[in-house]
Length: 631
Image (cartoon, rainbow, N blue to C red; front, side):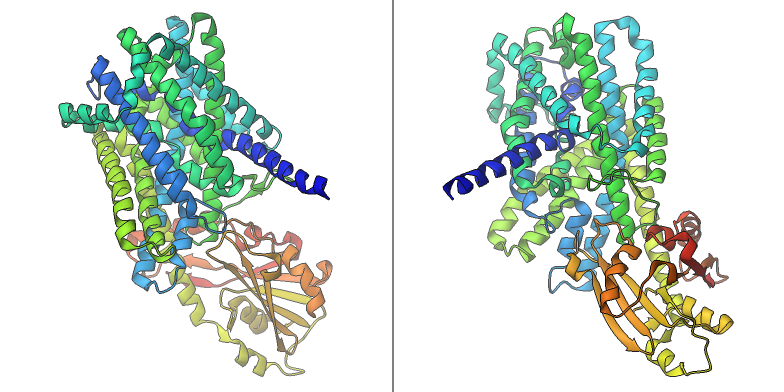
């Protein structure tokens, strides 16, 4: 008995260790590759700073305390408490805050807008992260051999094209290598930095915050320009929260505190120590840390690390697209599962190819990591600000934090986030406009879809019939009732759907068993199996069924209807037909929406995946019926 008790903690520890290792390859790829370009950009032409000893210590102090306050205190200790049944991320947070009791509709609408804004900014980050990460890694070739400068751009584009081209095969086969490779990367970061720190230990004085304060006081407005570059050190912090559902709080916290933070600080301080002894190394201080014989292996390892970081970002974009579609914030999209055993391994073709086009376009337009750095930061800091506001609302309403405690804590976070966002806004003309344009375009698309869909549902509901009236009109002899079961999808649980009424009107057919099926996606990530289906028998062979899903789940109607055979609803696969409304939306002479929303919604409808495909209905057993709706 004692042996069994002793074995349990060991199993738990091994599982935590495995999750911690796996988290390295997914959660920390973005922030872990920041040393490739952060220090270099702090002393770029944009900031105008020279790598003098005081400036080096000041910049290092700013980087240190941003990592401690923003990542460790804010995200690791506070934000990661805001889990939506284990899940994190801006949409999960929005859903969690929105379902708190006693929230008026106006406040709930504000939270919805903030969630949509955070998601839109996230997509901007998804475009910039692969571009700047891969390009900065391949630029190490110029340090090894300046003659290779002309091939940096073609190699970077080739790596990115290959990365996106293999997405449809999934990462289940190679995903197991991500953690060990990233572990090697952080060990290399630590060793490279430690070597230089040993030669110039005075760099460790940068840990004292007074160096950051002295830098800010002596440089005035230039400090804002510097903060725009220092922000690059904390890009990827949002991933700690967004990927919490995959690994849990404990593995992510342990990985950050025990390995990632020490490795990052060691490398940043190593680069600073190198600049104290050789200011000319500012052309690429990261790769200058390595001895000459290790440059090519380091470029290869850095490229692999940035590919892994980019893969995590791409997977996050796929997950965000699926969540947005399920929550009704964007058009339905085709989602493919790339693994039967690995949960969450999905591929979204439309998002993949749009991301590839955007990333390659950014690389070709900006042509260097220094130019791309000017565009990087606004999306990240904007998302951070949205997260802080939503967590503050949750802390007060959900966690019941006293105002006297919550206000000072979140005031610090809000001031830092707002300052970083303002600092990055100074880079607007140098490229900062790119993520803003991307975010505005995505937010506008989401808003047009949401408003257009709501208007379409309202118009469609006017043509439905209360179920009680339908049941009362069914009498023997008036309607032909063939054997089998017909499943009608409807958004209105209390009314008969339009496709059923069309079938009755034109064909005078009503199957022996009729299921009026409503699919609901709640504000929770997952729904327990025993809460998936709710069944009501209406009489005369009619049944009302509600299937509930979380916003992290992929609906599969045939699979989830099958168990209902035990509840009096015969659902034999070859004797069950599915009827889905497929309405044709056209522009009205007097549109119910602003003209621009109407036109954008009509375009989105054309590219939206049908409900039959999205819900996994069998093609050979599905009938689509619809009508013309003027928007």
